[in-house]
Length: 232
Ligand code: SAM
Image 1 (tube, rainbow, N blue to C red):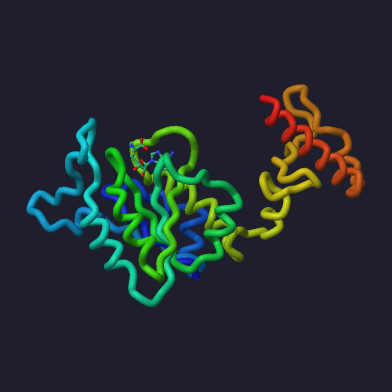
Image 2: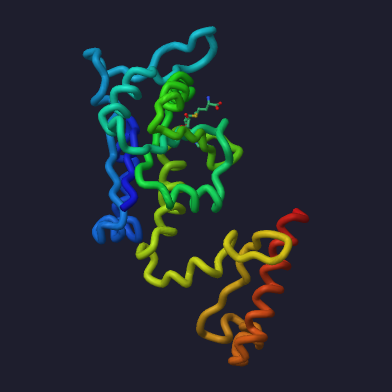
């Protein structure tokens, strides 16, 4: 079972993880998701989690100690953990990374806020023998916090775990998993009933029942869409 621990100062933000596919996956015991409130691991009366940046500049930086205390409480010295620190300065998340994470046993997500987390947190855990640290971005833009980024990664990762999707074949023919000799493709267009909607017809080949020709048409469409994206 994949165990996921998420640390945030806004635990409520992560409520959607209880719904739909991920909610069912937790009920079935395929994954577990625990949300931790960083403020519960502060030692001052105001429960502060941030301070002014060394070197000056705008904004506040999240202090290392509450992160250290929280991650130490979640982890132990023997189990292997992958700590994922969300940051727009990290490696770009993609399907390959989702596949890699779906094979892990213990993922800890650190959701930053303000100007981000004191850089020593990542450095400290990278030096612990039972930790792998990944600094991960979900795209080239800046969000207000790491919670939404965490939900993106958790959903993309969890749906790859056997049993989470009702029909595992759905994983075979989808964007970024479909491939041709040149690399990965985005998916072909999909249609459902009725065959005629507002004057628009479903491509005739899909009604033909000729599965070989349908497969060829789909690959051609996936290649066309992928090509169009690279031309944009
Ligand atoms: N000062 C940081 C910078 O310029 O790189 C941005 C901090 S951002 C306002 C606050 C937090 O949101 C980050 O610590 C991170 O956890 C999260 N965040 C923002 N954009 C993100 C992205 N594209 N991917 C992942 N996390 C992101």
